[in-house]
Every structure is written in C-alpha cells, then in structure tokens.
Length: 251
Image (cartoon, rainbow, N blue to C red; front, side, top):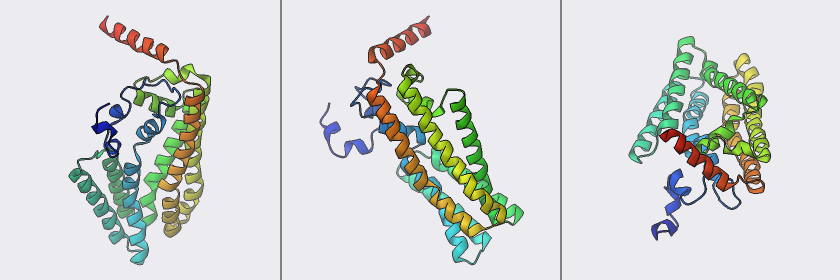
C-alpha cells in the first residue's frame, strides 16, 4: 500500500474500486470492510440523498413562511436545485442523483403550477414510492431481492451472494425493510395528500425522507454485514466463476 493511501484523508475521495483494491470482490469474507461501501454505492451515497431532498425542504419552508404562496415556493425549490447542481459542478462531483432529483422537482413544480394545487407538488413522489415499493416487494416474492443484485453489481459479482442461504435471506430482509419504508410513506402521506393538507404533508415528507431512509439503510446494512461475516462466499469459487466468465467471453 502506498504512503498516500495510508493518510487520514485518503479515504474521503476514493472511488469504490480503490476502496475494494486488494479485496476479493463479492466474497463477503469476514473483515473485508466493504459492506458499508457497497451499501452506499447501492443507495446512491448519503450526500446525494440529502442534496436531492433539499429542494423539497425549501419548497415547504417557503410555502409556510409566505402564507401559502405557491409561486414563490415553487421558484425557491427550483433555485435550490440549481444552486446544488452548480456547487456539485464546482466540486467536480457526480450530478447523477442531483439531476434526477432536480428533474423530479421541476416536474412536480410544473404539475402544481398547472393544477393550481400545492399538494400536487408531492404527487410524483407518492407515485414513485408506490412504484419502488411494488417493484422491491415483487423481487422478494419471486426470490430475487433487488438489493442483492445492487450490491452484487457493485462488487463485480452480480449473483455470488445467491450461493449463500444466509446472504439470500439477509438481502431479502433488507429489501423488505425498504418496502416497509415506502409503504409507511404512502399510508401517512397519501391521506394528507387527499385531504389537501400541504403543511402536514410537507412536514411528514421531510421526516420520512432522508432521516427515515438513513435509519432504514443502517438497519439493512447491519443485517447484510452480519450475513457477509457469518456466511462468506468462498473466494476461490468466486474467482473460478470470474475466470470461467472471461474464458466464455474469449470463446
């Protein structure tokens, strides 16, 4: 390991590939210290999660502080999204999650303006939660939890985790945790949307946003970490699979 990789700040800006350098990818071996990095990769990273939620927070705060002025709230949310994108460009950071969040905010703003109903700013989010929840639930019901493939894809061994019963169960449980979060959002925010209670809807949107997501991700991380520790995938078997894959490609 080079001197620079031992410095205290070196881990803050390393890519996933650099973090995993020298570690058997996708083995889940005890002490490989990759589970947290893989989970962060699978969910898009904490900074991206927070940045993408800020325009929504700005919207509801402006809406409340301006005596329900929908136009001002929408413009404040759009400006917040633009500022975040500019800051990311200046820092030369990924714009993928911020841009996807900004596109969502822009569409929500257009919908609210078009209908003249502030609660419609939250309608795309409700529909997205429903779609995610259904998709994740179906993946678990058919025995192929999507979180397993997300983490597996980050390791370069997409299906290696399926060779361990414990890891299969852990990824299924972790995926169900996110299904529960999306369902909780719909059960709480749905009636508020139908009632047109924008203030309460915005507040619960914030509470059930990144704080609830972070808690769910932490619990899922511990579940997966334990399975990877207790039932690691045989590294030699994983290596053989990679070699066979390369051979088949060359043929």
